[in-house]
Amino acid sequence: MKHPHIPFLFLVPFLFSGPAFARGGPGAVLELDWVRAQVARNNPDVKAARALVRAAGDEAKASLSWPDPQLGVEYWQVPRPGLDLGQAVQKQLDFSQTIPFPAKTWLAHQAASQGAREARARAGQVLQQRLLEAGQAYWDLYGACASLRAVSRTLEVLGRLVSISDARNRFGRVDRMGQLMDPMARMQGAELENRMEGLRHERLLALRELDQLMARDPGQALPDPPLDPPPPRAPATDRQALERALAGRAEVRVAQSGLARLRSERSLARAGWWPDLMLQYSAVDMAGMPVGMAMAKVNLPFVWFWRQGSEEAAADRREQASQRDLESARDQTRRMVLDEESAFQSELAQLERVRREIIPEAARARSLGVEGYRLGGVGVSDALNAVLADLAARLQAVGLTAQLGRSRAVLERLMGNAGRDDQ
Image (cartoon, rainbow, N blue to C red; front, side, top):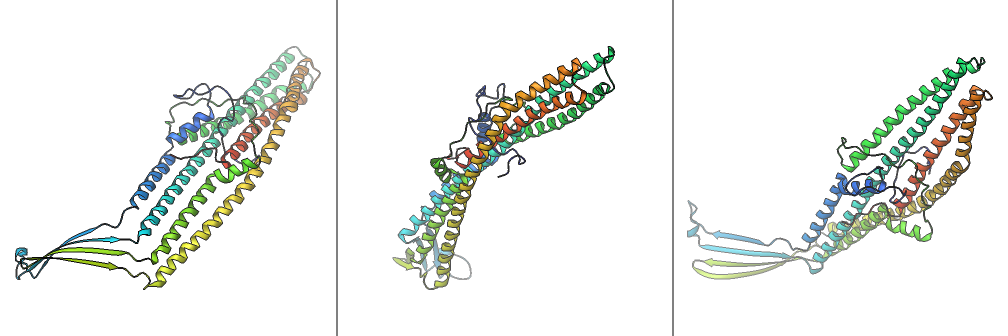
C-alpha cells in the first residue's frame, strides 16, 4: 500500500505511553484510549448499530412462535329483512391453529439467530470504522500540532538571524551579500507564518471531526495530543497473528456470520417441501341442539413444485455467493496484513534513522549556521539553508511518527483488536 500521501487512517489502543486521561474527561494531553472510549460510548452510528442488534435478538425470539391462532363466530340462516342474530338457525364458534411441520419452527429460529449474530458482527464493523475515522482525525491533530511547534521554533531562529543582521548593520560589519539577510529572513518568516495558518486550520478541522465522532459539543475544549511520543512498538505479525486476523477482522466476521445465516435459510427453504397441519374445532348450536365439529387440513407444497424448487435453488445460489465473499475477505486480509507489516518495518527504520542521524546533524548544522553568521564566517544562504534543513528534518520525523501510528493501527484493526462490539 502507498502510505506517505494517504490520509491519516487509523489509531490503536496503548500505542503511545504518556500522561493518562482523567476518567471523567480529558486531562493535560489527548490520549487515544480516551478518544476511543468516547466514540464507543457516544457515537450515534454505533448506538444505532447496537439497537439493530437488540432488534435482531427480539426477532429471533419471535421466530419460536407458531402462526397466530384464529377465533371466529358465525351465524347461519339469519331471517331477512333485518339483522337479528338471535334468530339465527345456526350459531358457530370456531377455533383454528396452523401447526408448521415440527422442524420448520426450529429451522426458522436458527436462521433468525444467525441473523442476530450477523447484526452483532456488523455492529462491530461499524464500531471499528468509527474508531478508524477517529484515528484519522487524531493523527491529523497530532501532525498539525507537532508541525506547528516545529515551525514556531524555526520562526524563533529566523528572528535571531534578523536580530543578528540588525546588529551587524548597526556596527557596519555587513557586506553586500550580508545585506540580504534581513529581507530574506523576513520573507522566509512570512512564508512560515502562512504555513502556520494552514496548520491551524488543519488542527481545527481535526478537532471538529473528533467532536462529531465523540458526539461532543464543539464548544468544549480538547487538549492537544502528546507532541513527543516514543516510537510505537513493533506489531507481532507471525503466523498466530495472521490467524487472529483471519478470525477477528470485522469484514471476515461479517462474511462468516452471513454465510452461516444463508446456510440456515437454505435449510429452511428445503423444509418448505414438508406440509403444515391446520387443526380446527367448532362449537355449533343448531336450532337449540349443541354439537361439535373437528377438522384437520394439510397444505400440499409439492403441487406448485416449481415455486418451491426455485426458492430452494435461490437459497443455494446465495449461499455459494456468500462463500465466495468469505474467501475474498480472507484473501484480502492476508495481503493487507503482509503489506502493512512491511510498511511498518520500513517506516520504523526510517524514523529511527531520522532521529538517530538526521535530526542531531540538522540541529548541529542549524547552530553552526546561526553562530557562524553571527561571527561572519557563514553566508546568508548557508545560514538560512541550515535553519530550513533543520525544520525539514523535524517535519519528516512528525510525518513518519504519525504514519507509524497509522500502520500499527491498521494491523490492530485487521486482527480485530481495534474495536469489537459484543454488547
